[in-house]
Length: 101
Image 1 (spheres, rainbow, N blue to C red):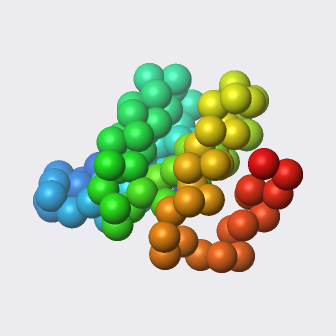
Image 2 (image 1 turned 180 degrees about the vertical axis):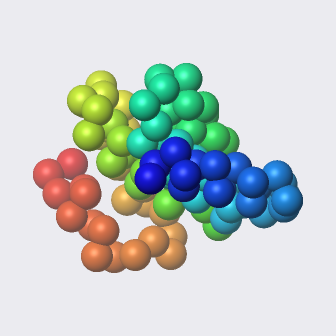
């Protein structure tokens, strides 16, 4: 199922490589890949999407969730959460991520 999702998003991105929303979905799908290289590429793509104001909050939130799920460095996760908290226009319900920071 995960491989199928990744392949579908890969094809979608190939058809519209300029569409950042497709790039975001492709990166999110690859975070669940079995191959470490695919997960690393997904993290790099999410990091790049943080530079786009429209996708900054979603990409940062995905990196936070990935860091927690994969026992990433706590200091890096806290830094991402602090940055995320300052973004304008994010969904307020996600503030639970920032509790205690």
